[in-house]
Length: 501
Image 1 (cartoon, rainbow, N blue to C red):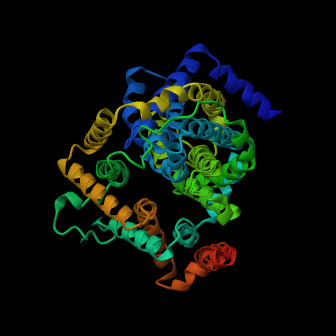
Image 2 (cartoon, rainbow, N blue to C red):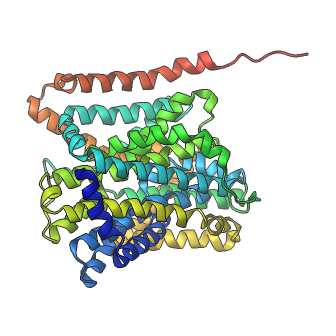
Image 3 (tube, rainbow, N blue to C red):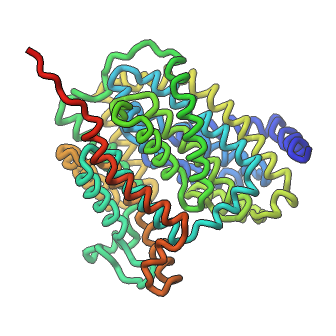
């Protein structure tokens, strides 16, 4: 009964005209922010926070607006990923693997509608999970210590090498490149610069946004120039845009499974939507096997990461609200907003300020419906991007990339670095070396190193501490199996060719 009473309080706040307007506006702005390469939800929320103070919003209204932007950006990240092979943000990275091939096959509209439905399912179920399981799942996060987190990150890299590429060696090399890039900068422990070459611009490390825009957006421009527009989605003859009911029906269990995986990944502090998206995609790929044809433009390859990353976005709110620990970069920004508004997140927040928590939850439920209604009809507008002449679209993509990166740092060096990453991405793709492991290495490398350092400090340098718990041992076993098993499975599943006269 308490649940229904609290929901009644929440919907009483959320359905007020002003709060409802904030949710709709936040969803629209968030979708645009997510679609712009390089911005992403964390930067979008951070840039818009001053507006909340300018408007004089109270705590509940400010939180509703910012979380609507957050959810909208998670939706919007899929647009450029599918249409142009340029991830709008880091969680949308996995969507490019099947979304872009589907667009090249003339099914960009189907891919966008399917991804919108998967995003809705993931985000809606995550909000339900936030409402029902927040106090319980918050305790699960305490079980994960530095050893468990290090094993989890090793699992991510091992399964990426084993399942995302036909050549494990090339995937492993790409992962090492990403981890090496993540080490660039001043060491937090010793204060000494690492791999900077004496260049002061590198002392703060390399921003993953610079890398992600360079490896995908700029390298895509290079490929377009080299191929004169062949083998890209631009100018492809599009089928009639409609709701792909068959694909939605076939992926319903995929959406449900990946929503659970993404939500749990979001609850773990520091894991975030990137890991939730990755684990969801890898899980579905392992279930489907070689016959699933992941990476060629299959519906499950779109539904899995979209459901996973949007569910992780909702899951990341659990530790923020119940423990005061951000589950992702965006929730860290939201946490700073709450602290600025003199609200202290924690176990007592649900009892001391129920109007804030339940008003937020009710607004998120409404925002998910608004985003679905808003995004599906707009697919016809989105796909027209592919009909824009290349001589207009490509300079536009390049300009947005340069302006987006420069607006974040104001550094010309980051622009040069972005172009360098574009050249690197072009060369690696010519050599058939996957670029996704590089981005994953840059994203998770710092967290992985911190977990290893904490584990060594706690154990006084004893490496056996990394295998000291059943959870850690289980993760290590799955990591080794995930890397080695595909080598044998490909040989077993590979059908012998019949010789015909």
